[in-house]
Image (cartoon, rainbow, N blue to C red; front, side, top):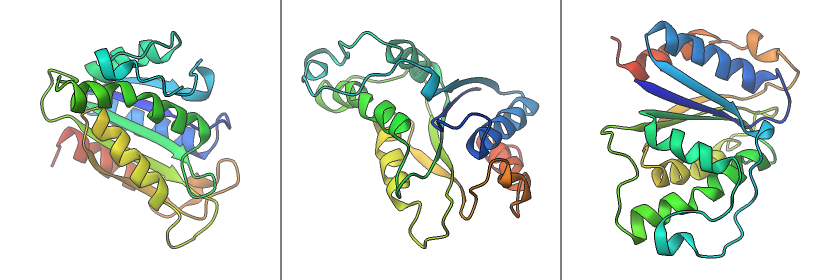
Length: 190
């Protein structure tokens, strides 16, 4: 099983990266192959709405998304990891999701498969400084439809409200147990 973890926090070694690293280690412990990328470290331009992807299902912007498209196609599991910024994904994560418009066009307009792999799944792992009742809803919606474009239907996630200070996630109830449970769910270990 190949898992692709895409971390969208601009803060290095913060709570989101701790979650992603812990989840990566758990998946590897269950014999999954993991490829992980920090979106803020990559050269990903925003979608320019040119419509070229509607003709061929390929984005014409030549940046690091071209490499990520290959990894998206090869993955069995796609995990987005992003903190919440103003009730949504970070700008880096959102730019990545927006650039999946090429995959959406390939899937829905051109009626082409994204991947030959069956039973692909997508997940979102997120932290938020506030404990707002609906703090994760915007991020979940964006992730759900972005993952659908990647042909990796959203299968859930983990959400940690009230986590702000760097490293604070380690003190959150359920860390790392919930990540271990998610890893087992992903690799289908009873």
